[in-house]
Length: 347
Image (tube, rainbow, N blue to C red):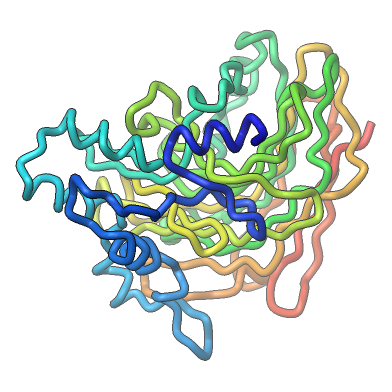
């Protein structure tokens, strides 16, 4: 058993050999909640995004999604019925690869940064800010300089989410050069956002499937990052970030390759959306990619209930870091239905 498999086993999880996703072990169910193995499988399977898509068009059915309850919240309810307190509930959930924040109601399935020993993750910036001060500030954190390319909507108040396919490419990072590298997508505005994508650090070859929330910790930890699987340089991963409620301080859900992985909160129902390739270094040297990254077939969901291709009818801009150099390159063109966004690091 390799090190990752041991960590997963300690947290009641396994890795799907076909998708790379971390999944809850269902053997034995969750006896404290009175949930059998068969019932646990059913609860988890009910959260798969395929159950909320129209069978012919593939569009998400908002009527169904409005009634979405994630599997962790369902299990929390069953544990409360059996009079377990909040502390006991969180301990039980941790044994099954799940997390819950009693104060906010945030939930997840996956591993934390602490679980994986990922201690030195890069500082993040507001992807929807125009402030150059943010770019200056990053230089002062861990001595890191950040460079990027991004593609984003110009209207930042009407989108509820995105459904996109991301292939990370080599996502290159090497000791003494690029320290951290992400190929990612964001949904948010007003300084707050939800994020999901692929991360690689200079400390190893693994391409991690991650999620991030700027102001809420991953439940039960002091990290904003969550970790949900691994992937390869040539694999496309379907990533969905979707606002679930209406008004302000709304729930959002994240699905990766169909699997629900995280529920937390955004201040607004309507947001901006972007797709990005970001790198950090503390030496001024950026590791060149050998395989380019791609974002393809993106759909946007708006506050009017429309499910639309991200194409030429959507106000869009392409942007890179203000200060030189510009190691992250990009190309974009219209595919069959939507923009194809290609990015790579070149020095």
